[in-house]
Image 1 (cartoon, rainbow, N blue to C red):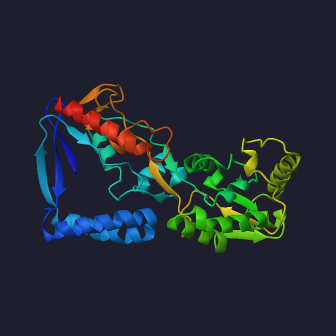
Image 2: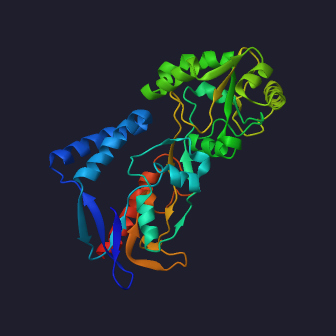
Image 3: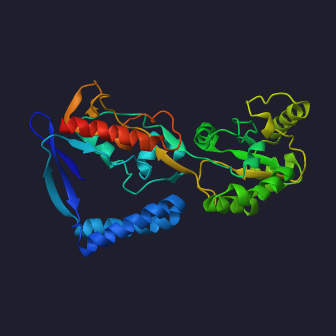
Length: 344
């Protein structure tokens, strides 16, 4: 879609778009490339990026301009803006180095279309970045620290919650510190606890994706962590573990043990994509909408007549906090709400 059409009163009455004939050779090729691009973007974005250009060239060459009249209303459901690096830099710069999850159509176009006719947006700084370092579950026995050596959060937290804690750090950088005992047990858990793509991640972390040293102080230097800060954190963690005291960040006792058997390892858990350790993310903000109808609203709360938004194009249930599957539920709910309003 390239634009919205409004009448003299400001009511949205249609759309302008470009369309490739569905059953033409170009249309069939576009559909095949888009499907392949979507899969590759999930598992290995550098390969997916190779298809971006051909897809866009097909759209530019074979797309035919069309104007469609909307008698009851237009629903914007074009995803978020995770593939628009300029919008990410503007609204959520801490997440610019993560791996975009979705399709290249998640470029913010739906949000921008709504804004072009007066719609307001909100929660544009909210992004869910999933920094999972388990399974294997043994890895949660490590400590997650920032560049100052301070511990960030309970390492058993869900990946999106861990990602949010990392995003608050300087440069969105974080490191998981473990010892040889944790690593040996984690390796033994890989066959029974992981799926194929998780085995790829574990293989990377256990071979190339770590820094190794004989002592905690040496590890800190090699990883770029403040040595004094890391030493204090590990010593305090070990002292509590040996004494059987509750973990200061609430980690269950079964996942707490002293990190004392060298050599020691640091996994880079920063919010950046590494070849074998992706950090997938989606944007959560979007156009503000009326809670009853899904109609797009202006900054003053009034509704843009004839325009609705759903899914990640709109502010929704998960715009403040996200767990896996919540966006699907939110899209189903908001899509039904907008559809019901348009057909009423």
